Length: 341
Image 1 (cartoon, rainbow, N blue to C red):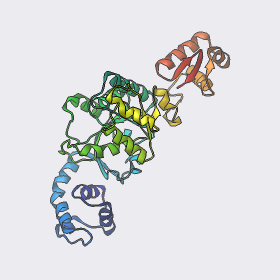
Image 2: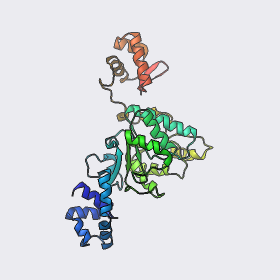
Image 3: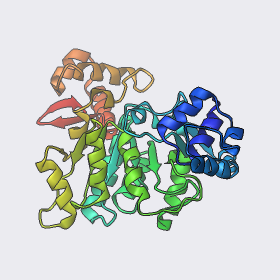
Image 4: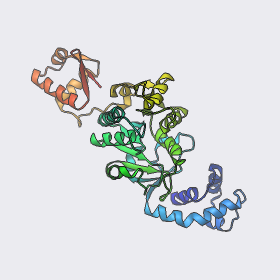
């Protein structure tokens, strides 16, 4: 079955996975739906599919989309329960499939503390080729996207409405920026409004696209904890930023930490969990002198004098390279010892 026919089939009615699989196996045509002659699908469903085909086809002709059988469908998302069979998108679809995705979520009514943490973390994480995934909501979501863009990195926004809807309207400029420099995703047909029940379902995609979910600020009864639960159900890690115990917006993150989520106070706390999240160090990225220093630090922390003796570079050459690497977020210094982040 052609990918467009598959998309038409999955989007035109409420067919189950089993019914769709049977249609593919039997190589059914849409004339079969018109005549309601498929014994394994209720007639009411057959009529609904046929009635919606033309409308759905218009959307498929007007918007970019991928289907679950495509090679560039994200492998991590395939692994979750009930993955979306079709995803509409705007922007660069290639950035969504990778092991360096991290989802960042939190309260729509974020405090200045939460907003600044999300923005700062996202702007640093993209220096390590991490793609920041979030939901384009107000508050923590928006801060995460903005931080990633500010750091000239990749970010993906997953919508709870059609790809042609901007919600909230206050994120119009951010929506355009992500469309141009990142990727906007939605499993919903264009024209679908931001209905309340869409967002919990949307959250499974946010969790499913990443190896881990970072909850920055949230109440106990929030969509962010739904995302965290989806992550846990699918074997993904959950991280949480601690907050003021007197604030309601910290109750969810503090509760997650009490129940096993890793407490996060810096970007380094995230990076140490995943070797693959570190920037790939190649000659294309760094000067010859920088690579000499990096090769030393890959064996563990080292004092300046140790780097000097091992590399045989001049004092000023090492100082210049360490300063550059530190500004780029690649190394840090504690008590005179230099380490890779």
